[in-house]
Image 1 (cartoon, rainbow, N blue to C red):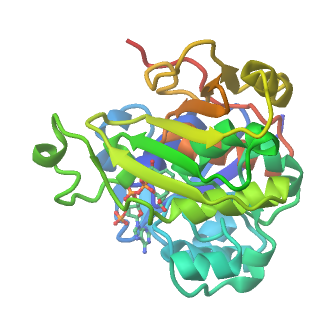
Image 2: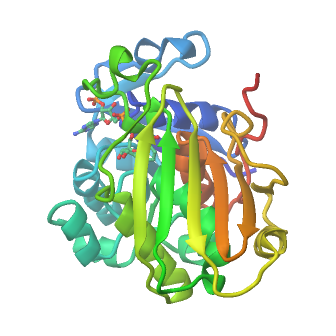
Image 3: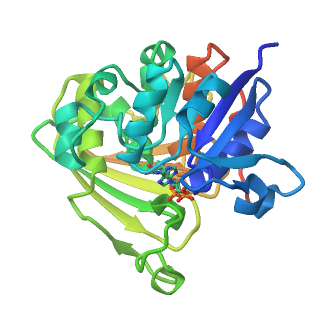
Length: 337
Ligand SMILES: NC(=O)c1ccc[n+]([C@@H]2O[C@H](COP(=O)([O-])OP(=O)(O)OC[C@H]3O[C@@H](n4cnc5c(N)ncnc54)[C@H](OP(=O)(O)O)[C@@H]3O)[C@@H](O)[C@H]2O)c1
């Protein structure tokens, strides 16, 4: 049995912790290097839940040491930081799965939404890690960009319906995320006092995930749609619920549309009643429900933002890039109740 060595950069964060947990249970991967910006610690000191489970030192980021140690690197870093690390690792022949936004978008879209891109060459050849739609691209990619958490839940629900939508009508996406979606850095917005017993929208109609959703709709279906995207923060730790409202141009049976898109997909569950985040929390599943009334379409999808929206989706991409069976190590049983 082949065992692949993998490294995680940015292991002190939320998605870094999820990656460690996933790799501990992976039959064909072992951790060969862990790093953060300051290093000089251990994984159990960073994440006490791992004490007596894994002993591993965490070093300062050192490109040569990482490249010597592994076959593939997960970058669980903020955008902009990721591209500088990825560029050097790719130059040394290491495969990269990046959880940030740095390799998700076309150059023009990226620079409009984020900042100047400093690794245009690898961006031009990166794969988008929405597994169900881009498996073939991922197989031979040097770098796979794990999709944003909101685009994951939105696109998995919406893409099967795009051929049936009225192109003149905008799509409305109302998304709600647990607080871990913002990462571990404390701000006034995600402090306990602000978020507890509260709910509010942020960056309405201006969030950077809207261009990602629009660009991938165009890539898969060659159709331009305007997406009105409004995310909300809700007082739960993890989990994301997305409600999509769109206008149909033709009669459809929504269950049949979902069935024909996903009947062979292990990690998409088509639900007969509206979905909820508890049933997917701790898993790689995306649960989807859809309903039609007249020409109105409602789609409801739920994921765990830290897993299907980040680390388990990154792991699925890594499996494909390493020639392993795609579903190895992906979690299936939810944390309920
Ligand atoms: N949270 C989610 O639900 C989610 C979903 C999808 C995608 N993502 C994306 O995944 C990435 C990681 O997210 P996260 O939620 O895990 O963030 P996080 O909890 O804030 O962790 C990011 C980690 O990156 C490390 N870091 C920052 N600058 C660094 C540098 N120059 N060198 C090395 N390490 C550095 C930080 O650790 P130190 O300061 O200790 O080094 C921090 O622990 C982000 O790009 C995020 O947008 C997150």
